[in-house]
Length: 142
Image 1 (cartoon, one colour):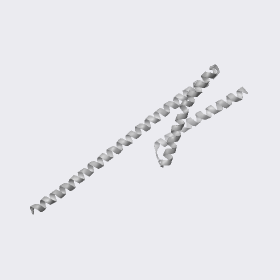
Image 2 (cartoon, rainbow, N blue to C red):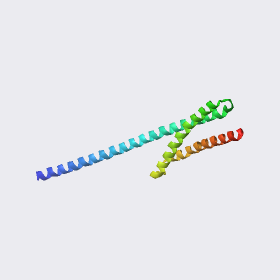
Image 3 (tube, rainbow, N blue to C red):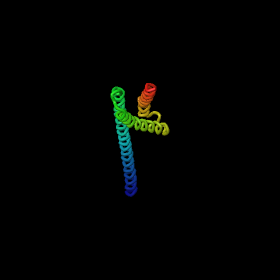
Image 4 (tube, rainbow, N blue to C red):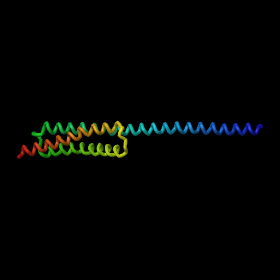
């Protein structure tokens, strides 16, 4: 009978150890998943901050260009336009790439996707403003 009791204790002890090990493993998996989500959130926040900063800077450059257009030489006008498009084109590429990848992966309930769609509005408006401005300049020269 002593052997049977010892065998049962060994089995229950092993079972208890496996349960504790599984619980610890599950907790560690949950912690790792939360850390990954936090890291992904930090990366998204950094990208959004960079995009918003670049858009703000592009609109400041566009405002300066429009405000001082008559006083600027052709070289300075070209510098303004190059700086403007050097900021707007990468923003457009980043936003479109994110939107396409989110739509292809099927994450339609992603809140960052809504922000990306909202940021497309001022980017599109900036292209429209620049096209209207250039067409207005062409008509005025003729």
